[in-house]
Length: 254
Image 1 (cartoon, rainbow, N blue to C red):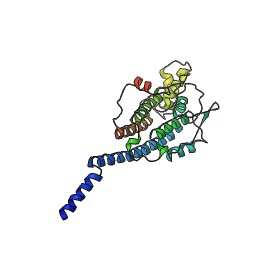
Image 2: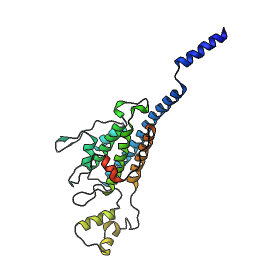
Image 3: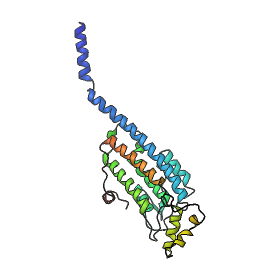
Image 4: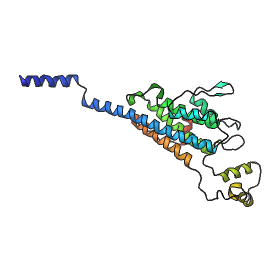
């Protein structure tokens, strides 16, 4: 009798239970979704810090009245701010990023366009508006590849992009004396040792020619990119590193 009961219970468990390998798979997918949430929180922490530093280095390129609201959006994972440009409502992250890297030297609030474009891109990629995802199956591998390439291109553009007057769109890696020299050369002053020595930042000894460039901004973006790569691994395969030209062909705001 006891043997018959044990046999019945065995068949019941085997017939009605979830196969062990499926349970393991579900558990890993659930943990992966939780890890993605943690990745997003880390990335937005870096983005918050990035805006703080960017506004200090580019004090004329952001709206002081809007600054606390943008910080609130990032910190609390909201997506409520909608900016206008020339009377047109900006709807997508592409709209914001295109303006951030527009060569027009009179683009206002360039910092805000960049940060909000990045925030909206991350918010959408990580499906924040849809609440906590139970498993990684809710995410699309291609979306994270695209996010990875966006961030790689943005990191490169921030270092190199200039407006139609030849000025860098964003001041990040440059020392003050490099900016001062660049502005004087744009005005047509010939390069000479006297010109370099008399640059305000060097003349007052606030900086020296041997000072290293500022890598804080690139480090923050690199940390964001690494977290996105970690997220991509949770979903499928990590993005393949390709040339910058190939990356540009895969994104649309340029």
